Length: 274
Image (cartoon, rainbow, N blue to C red):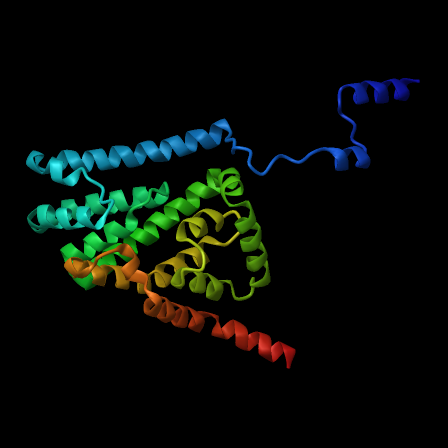
């Protein structure tokens, strides 16, 4: 009687743990908004506060007459051209301060998935040239991607599952197939526009990609695209649209470079089948 009474009470409370009841329980809807714990929310707020405080301190050190020119994020090619004209002298006379501010803004934008980093890359090419601008962009892009990786590791799972549920499942299955040659596959993804970089940054810790592989693939894999963007920044007057950066010819070249990264994987599979 005691066990029967417990079963009745559990059923009345909706706590039936039988296999049939578990199968009948509806799963959480795919479109449900992600929920963060207090710890996760506090961690995200702390990172955001540190970035804002750092950028604010950098701007305090800049000459006041330059504030109106610096406090502007480029959102179009017209903005990049305007910033190039306004900041050329400042970037030359206060290079260390400018580079520090540029790096902070770039890393902040990439950490929190703020659109517009491609315009920042164009600006680096316009102000510093291909070599210095390329090094600056690769460094900041890698640092921003790494920061996004760690932030996603803390709080990203519910957000990525909500924004890209199908893409995340596909990515996870592809990673599981390529555990032995994971670096080659990550290099291919970084070099080619197969998957958006924002998604790769957010999803990598969720699908258990080790950070050293993520970092190495990002550092090396972003070089071709960064070179293309920075080089285009040297000729802003000839650039009519951002889409011109990645025309058919450029995409073919990127996929050819990316295919080199996956050749060892293909050859290994061929030897296994033979």
